[in-house]
Length: 86
Image (cartoon, rainbow, N blue to C red; front, side, top):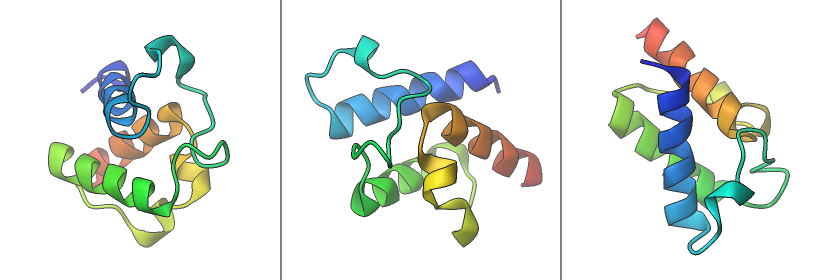
């Protein structure tokens, strides 16, 4: 599993679910999602459930903070870390 594939899937999910009609170019791997107001607590939960179902992983409570969910790059790294631990 490549980090680029995870980033692409996360980006597609965020654009479809939370930024409909937004240009894909407007969302980069380093766009602040939580601190930038794109993901609130409910949106973060929806994203986490999507990732758990898609990748067959379970996140720990300490994974679900702004530090781990603030960018597409950070989310992809977290998914890889959880896949490795599974």
